[in-house]
Amino acid sequence: MQEIREVNSMKNAYGQLFEIENMLRHYIEINMSKCYGCHWYHSAPRLVLKRAPTKPYSNLLFHEYETYFRTYPNAFKRLQKEFFLYLDTLYPIRNKIAHSHSLNSYEFQLLNECLEFFTRCIKE
Image (cartoon, rainbow, N blue to C red; front, side):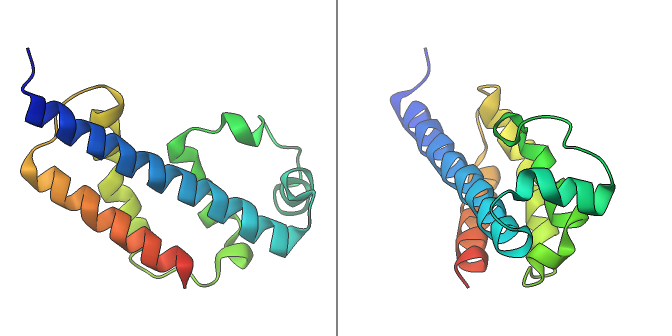
């Protein structure tokens, strides 16, 4: 049986991940709306990619958020250079949390740094 401390740590990690994912999703929605209008989900892909979206926005997986930042740079001009480094750092940690594998202390530290960075970066 898992130690109570480890369970509580992983609950906290899941909460931080939940916060990051929802923050990024909301950030995409806000910036795409500002740049491409209220029907951005349908208009932006047709304008930039010359095709309709391939699946509903609500069904996107976490790693697919990055495609928005890279495909629609006009909507995300304020992103810091480190943004993609923090996303890359987060992927393996996110997968461990999603598959119920415990994080080590270094991974907890990285998760905290990612949360702080994205919170600061998005709120600027």
